Image (cartoon, rainbow over all chains, first blue to last red; front, side, top):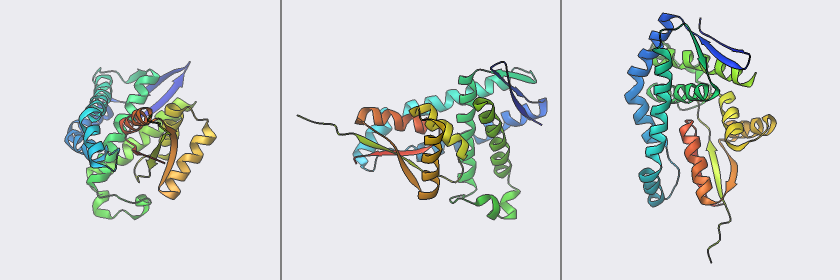
Length: 149
Length: 79
């Protein structure tokens, strides 16, 4: 099972081949939903004119940042190694990328309120997005523990 | 003369983002200690939103954009 360790100040992610392939597949299949989700959720202002300016001048930077984070994860996973050393900046990229994917998965499942972990129905538990929520949530917790240690 | 009294940076609750992640974001972006970041995160979680900073408009917009880059729901508004 995937593990995140911190040794001598360095963060190491341990993932076997099957886990790396699964993560790459998640990034590929969720890509369009992640892009749509960022468009919908990057709301900064109530006033339409101010939001239009934000969409024009700021949102492209947010989207570039998101794409760079996803690329950073993809590059690390594509190296063929079971132990992936990450700098703090890379670990933050992983956290951000996973959060974008989890948000898109949650939106796809129609999750809108807290407490969904207990209430979500059996049909949704069988959907791949539910597994993505749990798996990436686990990896985020591991990365956060390593960053805070 | 125009005066900028500061805009509130508001973070909104969402049911997906991990609470521990929100604490890390508040610490990294605003330099809060663990206790302050946790208190703000819990306010977001229990009350639906929290003002996490009050800054001049340009700086507040940068903060909101950085929060969006972390995937948090954030807006800015005049106090």
